[in-house]
Length: 369
Ligand code: NAD
Ligand code: AHE
Ligand code: ZN
Image (cartoon, rainbow, N blue to C red; front, side, top):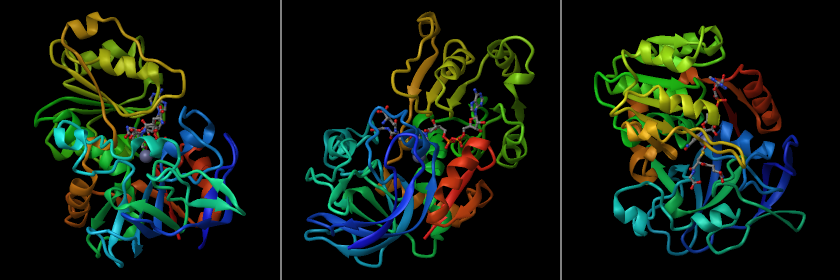
C-alpha cells in the first residue's frame, strides 16, 4: 500500500516527506495506523549520523501510538481496532532474557531490528522499488507501520493518542529508570543531569516514589520552571557554579547523592554523575546515548569505594506488561504528560521539531497524522 512517511535519506540531512510503499503484515505481524508520534533526541542522534547503528535511507521514529488495522496469520494477542503503542523494546516472554526476569532487553528480534529489517530479514518499506530501512523496529514517522505482535502494547481505548504516544519512549524511559532500574526509595536524594524530554520524567518519577531532594542540572535556565512543576526541589546551572560541579553537588546532597541519572548523552557528564554519588552506595544510571566512538572513564577507586554505574534502556520496562499500566497512571492523573508536549505539528513540518530541539525551545514535539 501507499503510505506517507518522512524519509531520512542521509546523515545530517533534513527529512523529506514522501509517498512510500509498505508491504502488509506477514505471520505474527500487525499493520498499525499511526495516529501520533513524538520526536525524541534519539531520532536526532541517528538522523545526525552519531548512531553507529544508523542506516540510510530509512524511516525514523519510535515514540508512536495508533490503531491496528490488519492482523497477519497466527496473531493471537491483537485484533483489528485495538489501540496500541509500538515497542522498540519488544517483550516475547520466551527468550532467555525475558525468562530470566533480570532484564527488559528481549533478544527475540534484536539482531534484525539493528539491521533495519523485519524479523524475516526483509524490509517492507520501499520508495519507487528501492528498499528503505526500518528504524528501531518501529518507524513511526509514517502514517502506517508493520510490527511483530511481540513489539506492540495494547492500551485502553479512551487514552488520547496525541499524549500517550510519549509513553512509547520518553515517559516510560524516565519514570521507569527511577522505579524499575534504580528502585529509588522514599527519602532518597536524587540528581538529574539534563532536564529535557527524559530528565523531566525522571524528576516526576522521583517525586512519585517520595524522593527528598530532587536536584536538576541543566545549562538551559528555561528548564527550571517546568522542572519545578514536576517536582524538582533545587536547580543547578553548571555555568553558574564557582569551581567544580562534583564537589558542589556532593555538598548539596550532604555527602553525595543516593541516585543520579544522566539524561543527556555526554560522556563527561556521565563521569560527573557517577562521581557525585555517595561513597559506599550511590548509584548512577546512564540513560543518555553517546555518539559513535565515545567512551566513559573514571578512576576505578570510584567503584572500589562503593559507587555503582548502571544503564537503563526504555526505563527497564517490559513493554507489553508495563506500558498499559503507565497509560493507566496517566489516565488516573498519577503522572502528568500534557505540559511536556510543548509543540505539535503535521508530518510535513517534522523538521521544525528537530530545529526546536536544537534551539532548546521544545521539550517534546508531537506529530499528529
Ligand atoms: P533533550 O534534548 O530533550 O534534553 C537534553 C537536555 O540536556 C536539554 O535540556 C539540554 O539543555 C541539557 N544539556 C545538554 N548538555 C548539557 C550539559 N553539558 N549539562 C547539563 N545539561 C545539558 O533530550 P531527551 O529527549 O531528553 O534525551 C536525552 C538523552 O536520552 C539523549 O541522549 C537520548 O538519546 C537518550 N535517550 C535514551 C533512552 C534510553 O532508553 N536509554 C531513551 C530515550 C532517550
Ligand atoms: N544504536 C545505538 C544505541 C542506542 C540506544 O542505546 N538505544 C536505546 C533506546 S534510546 C530510545 O530513545 C536502547 O534501547 N538500547 C538498547 C538496544 O538494544 O538498542 C548504538 O550505540 O549502537
Ligand atoms: Zn526515545
